[in-house]
Length: 398
Image 1: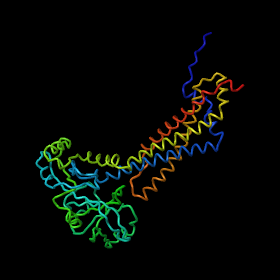
Image 2: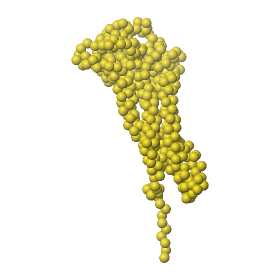
Image 3: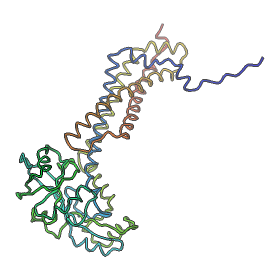
Image 4: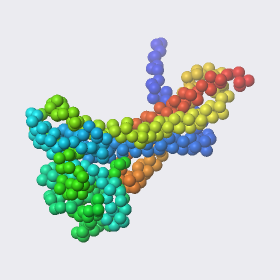
């Protein structure tokens, strides 16, 4: 009589038949279990908030640069960022027209203005952009459809997503009531709205005509511009033309493709300011805090069940089986702590966005990244805590 060879159990079958000792040990002490989940959730909130602020920092800093109507951007070598762009001679734009592939050039004037709130009178920093109203300088329909209004002197377009309370201003505008503000001691009329938002360096932004800009800042010479916006002919390679411009123009201007200019702005905030470093450090600190908290829980659990582990050893179970129990606990803590952490953080993101007008969003990629990081964080804690299992001597049970 032949015997039929039985197939070895699959991994899923092994997991289904396995007693969930890690789960049972964690829920045995409910108070400690809840405290452990809270610790993981706290670490997740800390990391997610720092990543959210960092993402908002980068996103808000490039909302204007990435929508400029340009393929190539000329700047001063003294540029720090778009808030402090410096100046260069307008003649460089006309010289750029000599390069094959350059279709058009457009000067842009930029200054960080100190303006007065129309109703409260409080002053705050606003980015003021001065441009030719007959030419499109940015790829934003809410600005371009109102450019003709800037042909009237002392007229501004106002960013309605500016940080602060502007309900009364927007209500007056919707009711066609005059909305008057003040910049540099000159009264200005708000005749159009657009939506961009604040950043870490400014409350919001204005758009005005070149003539109004120079009237507000008479010390700024019309021949010195902040940014040069260059459009190239269709089908041309912006990198090749940018290289040709670098060779053709003097070294008193920097030449960037639009993407290079956006990357330059991000890099400034990431490496040249303390705030970028602080957010990165906050993420690292959140990770370390999580490792320590989970380690404390798992280490305490291992110590309290050391005799049980020794019993398993006496029964013939391998060391890796005991390690699996602890790592199972680590993964359970990671997943259960992640859920309330993300839920709380989504609420904090919303409140922060409403209060600061910053583009802080809980993206799917960021959420999944934190889930993987949390599991990795907990596994590190579990590996460290399992060192105590080496002391689980079967002789301890006798």
